[in-house]
Structures are given as structure tokens and as C-alpha cells.
Image (cartoon, rainbow, N blue to C red; front, side, top):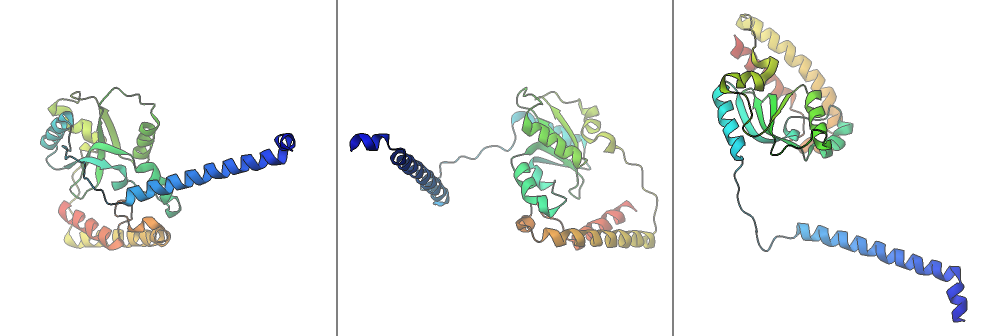
Length: 235
């Protein structure tokens, strides 16, 4: 009887199925235990505060502030803050791609429009790194200037603005507009933006990312207000 069971393929099939089932149950239990551990309130907050800047990032930040008095310089900004999916259907995929990516410094207008992103490399990492390639492609697709430098190896003060801003560093003076012309231009632009935003927001509202301020579209009213304010300042 024992020999027959040893040679019976059905018996061994049942054994293998039992082992596979046990392994699967063990994996499921392990994942559930890990989820519960993450949700549980920590008994000990084993954390320390740390500086936002490295030594070299702080030095570059100070020099950029001095070279670009009419711009804002922000530190350690996630790409989710200034890049977003153009289609709500792709929002989740892009959210997951962009979530781990950030840049050392960003140079912005006073309205928060990002002009350039700057990375201070901590080591001579190869540019062929997948995350690095993705970052470069995303910023190129969003038409945002991207520059990198090794610690302490950025241009001298008199060249720093051109290096950071690129071709956007010099903007011709805007033609003089009367208040009525400013109002008309602002109204036309606001109407076009409102129409385009409404079309995109209809799809976007179906996405769970609509409530994420890091990844959601601005409202049409907010866009119009910023546009009118910018046009008024230029007159």
C-alpha cells in the first residue's frame, strides 16, 4: 500500500497543490501583516530633523538668489508639483512614474511658473540611469530647461543667470497697452482658457487624482485671475 502511494501521481499532485496553497497563503498573510504594521501608530518616533540643503546646494541657492533678484528659487521640488498628465486617462500611470523624481532647485517666475530645473549631482552617476533619462524626457516634454552640475562646478556669478535661464533669460519689453486693451486681451485669453479647461476637467474629474493639489488642474477662474494680473503688471 505504501509503495503504491509513493508511485501514485495523483498523490504527489495533491501534495504539490497543498504546498503551493500553503505558500500562497503565507505570502498573503505576510502582505497583510506588513500593511497592518504600516498603518499602526508608531510606538517610538525614531526620527531626526535634517537640513533641507546639502552644503553645495545651499551655496548654489544663495548665488542664484543674488543673480536672479526678479525670480523665485525653490528647493527639492517634486516633479509632481509642476508636471502633470495632459489626459486624465493616463493620470495614474504618470503619477506613479513621476512620484519618486525631484530636482535640487527650480527657478520660477513670481507667479510660480517654472522656467528651469537644476540638479546638483552628488556623485559622477552615469546619465544612462533610467530615472535620470525619464526626468530629462519629462522636463523636455514640458519645455522646462534642465541643467546639471557637479558640486561647486557651476558658472561664475556673472554667467549664472544665463546658465540658469537659457534663452528665456532676456525678454523683450512688452509693447505699451492701454487699460482697455489689457482688459480685452485678458478677456479673450480667459475665455479660451476657460473653454479648454472645461473640456479637460470633464475627463479629469473622473480621476482619483482630481483632489491631489500636487497633480490637479487649476480652475479656469484661478487661471484667468493670474493672467489678468500678469498682463496688468506688464503695462
